[in-house]
Image 1 (tube, one colour):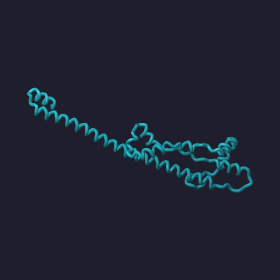
Image 2 (cartoon, rainbow, N blue to C red):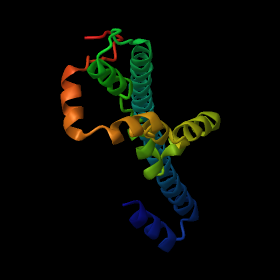
Image 3 (cartoon, rainbow, N blue to C red):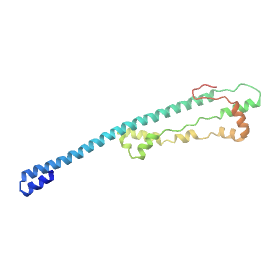
Image 4 (spheres, rainbow, N blue to C red):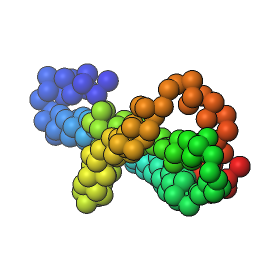
Length: 179
């Protein structure tokens, strides 16, 4: 419609009307692009807020898991077998001391941000740097490393004996209680 009026004004040599129509056309296109950009920025802020909440939730889960892991190892370290002269009790105590609690880092939100190229949604460069440093650590490998004591105890103990010993072991839980 505006283009038709602009064409008619040019054919009639009505330059003022043609100029007004051209300005209106350019302003309409400009405001259309501006509205689109504002909407994209709004959607980016919404996505950034969602990812921020997911990052916080992931870190809370990890903190809880690390706390449970620390409590578990404190329980293992504090546990003492009943003093006895029986070799079976010693075997159970050695096996019990080699128990571990597995740990896996939670990085879903961070991996999604980096894989989709959205890490810039986290606006603070210092925070992005700290997140990259934190998630760049090989925490899974540190906690998954099999300790030499565990490997040697369980390596020399026959599997059938381990099954029997496991039945008599106490259960150490992550809430520091021994059951």
